[in-house]
Each structure stands twice: as C-alpha cells, then as structure tokens.
Image (tube, rainbow over all chains, first blue to last red; front, top):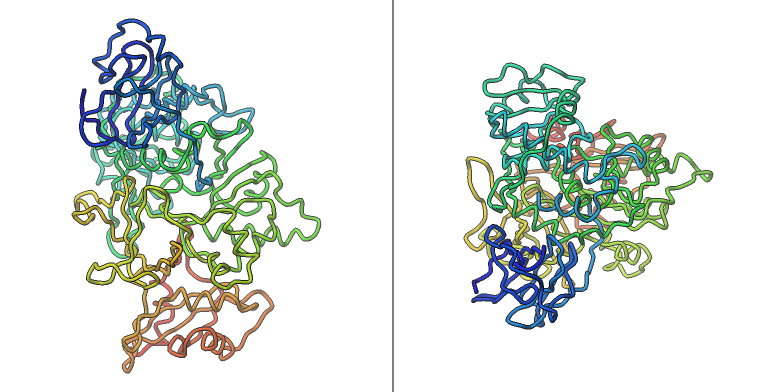
Length: 102
Length: 501
C-alpha cells in the first residue's frame, strides 16, 4: 500500500495491465488489479492469473474511477484483470470529449 | 512517448501522417521514433533542433527526442542564418535537422551536427530502434520553444513532459477519432499549436496532413482532395480562406468534409468569423486561446456557442463571438490588477492562469509562476458573470491617454464593423498634453473609401469620446509575422511622424 502521486505508473502482477495515475486522494491507497496489489512496473513480476472476481479486463486509453471520483487512473496497457481499491472495483469513467482545438 | 506507445498499441495499423494511401502508420511512426532515439543516443546530442518546415519527419523527431530523453527544439526556419545560428549555438551540443532546400546553413557550429531531412530519414529507415526504457520522468524537458523576441532577445520557453501530457490527457480522449478522420496542420513546427496538433491527433488516432507553406488555394484544395475533417488555423489564414471561398462565388462547392475548424493564436476580427460561419454552415467552429507557456489551449469557445452567438439578438450573447470562451476543465483563470489582487467579476486586468499544463518557465531564467502556481500571461482581459473570457491584447500594448487605460482591441473591433475597412491597428504615440494619443492605421478594402472623420465618429458613437482616434493613416497593409501576429512595434514606427517627437 502506498500514497499515489499523479503521474506515477503501476503494473498488474497477474496480467498485462498498466495504468498511470491521473488524480489520487491523499493518504495510502490499496491499488489492485485482478485481485492482487499493483506494483511499480519494474517490480511487477507475473505471479499468476487474475482472480475470477476481478477478471473483466481493462481497456487501453480508458479512465477508471472510484465511486466519488477522488481516484482516477488511465489505462496505458490493457490486460485481463480488472482494477480495484481494497476489494472494491473501479468503474469506467464516461468520456466527456471537448471539441478538438488542434 | 507514453502517448505514442499507446497510439501504436491501440491503432497501429492506421495511417498517422500523410496521404491516405501513401502515409506512414502509427506502428511505423513508433519505429521511426525509436530509430531517431538510437541516432540521438549514438551522437551524444543534448538537444534535437529542427530548422525545417512541417514534414513527415516532424512527429518522428518530436517523439524520438522524448524517447532519447533530450529536448526537442523546433526553430523558426524563416530567420536569417545569423540569428538562426545564434539560437542553435545556445542549445549545443545538438543534432540539427535542416531543410533540404537550405543545406549548409547550420554547418560549422561548435558542438552541432547538422543533417539534411532526406539524409536523416534515409538513415532512420536503416536503423534499429533504440532499446525501450525511455524515461517516464515528468520533469524531463520535452520541448523548448523560442519566443518571437519582439521585445528583446528570444527567450526559450520550457515545456516539460508533465505539462504536455497533462494537456493531452486533459483535452483529448484516447482513440476518439473515426478511421476516416484527417486533420490538416498548416501552422509551423516552431509554433506551440504545431506541436500540440501532433500530440493531440496522435493520441486521438487521427491522421495528420501537413501544409508546409500556407496559401488559401492550396489549403482549400487539400481539404477537398484529402477529405480533411478538422483543421487549425491562425487568424490571418482564416481571413485568406474566407476571401478565397467568397471569390469562388455561388458555384463554390464549399468544404463539406470539414467537420471542425479551430482558430487561435492572435486577435481575430469578429466580422471574419461571422463570414466564415455563413460560408461553412455545417462546420463546427472552435476558438482556442492559449500561449506557448501554457502548453497551448487554456480556454475555448465551442461550436454551439458560435452558432448561438451569431443567431442571437441579445447583445451579450452575440458579443461572445469575440470571446475566448471558457477555461478548459483543470484550468483556472483569474483577472488581477497591477498589485496582483483579483478584480471583481467583469473588471479588466491581467489574465492569470493556473493548471497542470501551465509551464511558465524559461531556460536560464527559471519559473515565472507565483508561489501558489499562477502564471501572469501579460495578456489583458476580463471574465463575464458566466465565465466567458474576453482577451483584449498584450498589456504592453495598452494606450495610456490622459491617465485612462485604453485597449487597442476595443477600438479595432469597432472599426472592423465599417464595411470599407479590411484591417486596422490602433497604437499609442507620444503626446505632450495627454501622455499618449491614439493613432490608427487603416487598410481599406479594394475599391472602397471612408473619410477619416467618419471612422472617428463611429468609434465615438460606439465607445466613449476618449476612445476616438486622434490620427488616422491609410496604409496598404499591416505588418504581421509569419504566424499571424500583428507587429505593433512596427506599426508604431510607421506612424511615428503623427506623434509629438
């Protein structure tokens, strides 16, 4: 468990998922993917497969948030596990696209 | 690099840059960026400089520099050799890519290895990509952009990885573009909008087409031939495009493929926008306001707001066509007085901005942010009670007449509404009694005339009598730099004979 900082990257230990933190609440956050803790990308070695309760997968380029949207992650590599915090699944955030300015 | 890696993973087979049948794909772009990084690492260069027009090399160089962890430095290739060489020597040791039409102009500078674009692309095609493992440090310098230096020696604005990534993640949805979408980029690489266009479109999965040397005829031709769906232009380009389409007359096929047209980068005469909206009834218009130091756009006026404004009888709603719209999510805007205190809503002052994408830093001069993260833009403006931002121009350009601060922009806006006026600039000139007097340089439309007193009377009627021009001079054209910025200093010099010594 660690305090998440915006811009930090985390990798799953049980699938190919990687995320970058867009926004995080203060204090420690128990970030999980496929039911196992996420680690800094260099430290994450494959230790199995996602738990059946957290195996809906992640989608490249999608944003995932907790219920009150204090935590927001961007999926930079997709995988088979799904994201959660302390056993509670994160949900896909609806895109609110801006008009293209460039 | 994070953005390109995602793009190559998510839509690698799509065409990233160039024509639909002859362009390079996102996967190929990724390979070229890796080869650029390998080249940079081998050469030991601390910077990657570019003195060249927009080309298919640009995205590979931008991302390749990021992969290798060295700043990318696009330079104004229109500068004279002397000035250009001075700028390049400031970022030595560097690899410098030059326009194949002007070889040799950066040869012989200490620590600088110059290579022509074609030679570099041939080298990259044969080269293995660098090992992965690029830095993810958001503090790395990503891009250095030299300011145009109209007020002294050019400053190198620093944009770090975290600023650019924040801008893209905050304003673009990954892979949002349809497979048929193509963006036309006609701003040069040394303009922040030219960099933002590459990053945003790569992330969105939208093919980029480049027009290295802008003419309205070429631009319109390319939009029609390639089915361009979105484009960004500076105000002078939009004025030329409007003239071109109007000259085609009733038989004009219009620009049916163009879904979105964004403009920004300088003052935009409201009548030109109104004519553009009438000529392109199905196109969604976006006015984007931003600065180099803020990683491009910080506020925008959206498509629906354009159409509502132009259709409205309510003068407040209608005047929004002349606004920069509302701040992007994640951007705060505050209007401050000279002492840095926030002015009440509706009051005028210096525009300050704050947000993750705001860099506000110059090489060798450090950060210009306040301790709590605000960047004073030095642009004057005001916010209305619904949060619309009105930009009135550079604070330095304000005319101070008899102790009153007068923004040139408000006088110019009024004169633009006169049917005979094609272009206009208001400046302050020395005046023994008033400190400054108001002089305007007016360009008339071909075949039209307007007496000076009629123009002055129009300003008196719409504004206040202290805004009335004291002198009017008719000129053939106004001086602009090549990215469409009015050079007021040159206007002042040209009208200097109308002031008191």
